[in-house]
Length: 140
Image (cartoon, helix red, strand yellow):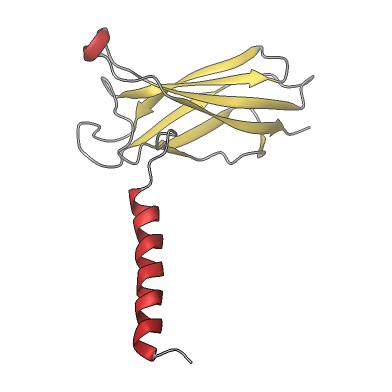
């Protein structure tokens, strides 16, 4: 039979390893803003998209980046610029918005591709390029 002290020590060690793994793990996937469209949502035109930078993407001149709407064949259907809806020169979350207009009569599925604004300059002056995709469906 185990002693209560050694059992406590084992549990403490296990939790210590778990917390160490969770809070110290590195990922190649950068953090990304939240967007008001969820994967596989049905969308209609015009579509207003709200974006919260959550402080992980930086705005440049009040713009967080662009949003492309691509159909299932890879054709661009619409394009929007994510513009700040509030003071953007602050640390932390900032709200952005864009509205896109498109015609999806012959299309069932597509993808929203969200690109960050790297800023001006080249080399060390420009930021890193990031993007992520949200699969969507068109309302019949």
